[in-house]
Length: 183
Image 1 (cartoon, helix red, strand yellow):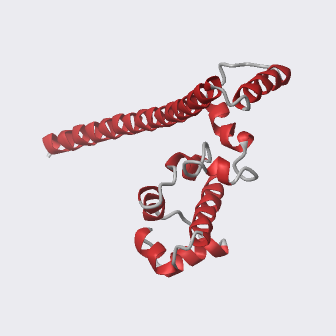
Image 2 (spheres, one colour):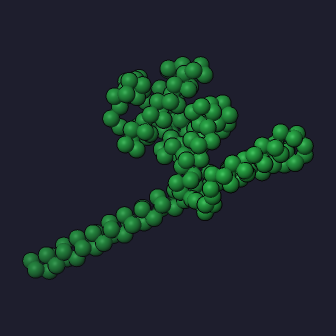
Image 3 (cartoon, rainbow, N blue to C red):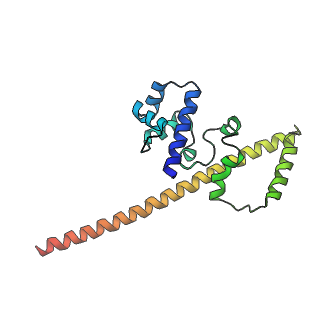
């Protein structure tokens, strides 16, 4: 399921780039993929995710790797503003909420805070500017924390795999050493 969602996000990214005027030859070159691979994505028949496509979307077109892989955050900076129907508040914060939820609120409390925030932002005062800057900064900080946690999980997984591989190799070398002594 998660694999299919990642492919759907890759397809959305490619469609977005095409709508922005990117030509097919440019996409195949920058994404390191063949015409056939990209067409399979677009037709919904892709059975794997090509790493160079993710890499190209991140490095050439500034897509967020966390969004591409996990669906959390925005696909690229300001996507929520450009596509609120697709990446509105709920879509943007869903992945963050799954990873960290120290603020346990009621919907009434959230609603009240949003009303207060809106009142300040539409006041066009210096407080509105300061609040807007803080909101953007906190949002970026939360996304960075999410990315950091994801990287920590990956490192832990790799460390565990390394220990398992080391133990397996040690067993194999002991077994090989015992066999050599017996002959």
